[in-house]
Image 1: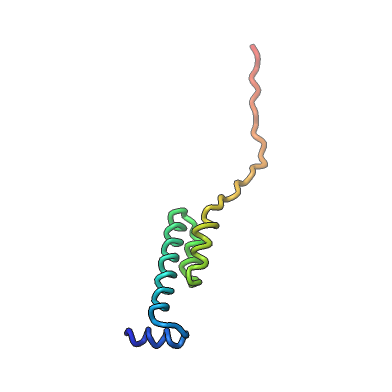
Image 2: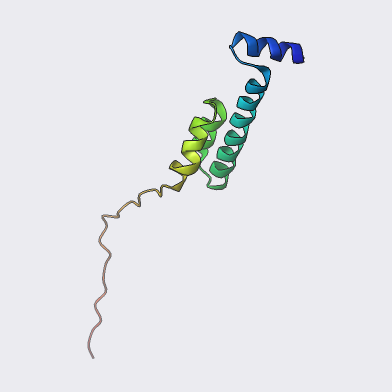
Length: 88
């Protein structure tokens, strides 16, 4: 099995330890992004982070920037009916 990974790393033009470090880097950030999106109940982000492999770039952006954005509140255009009090 190690021979397979060593051959794969050589075909990509890097050493085996660099290949392993990139895989670990990617997994750590992916897990952090998935964990945070699951806790915030952001299903869309969870699916995107789970399916795309971007060597940690997208999970890092999500973790530090996109997860901190607060959704815009919808402004209700309904006028609240105000009951006027009668004077006795």
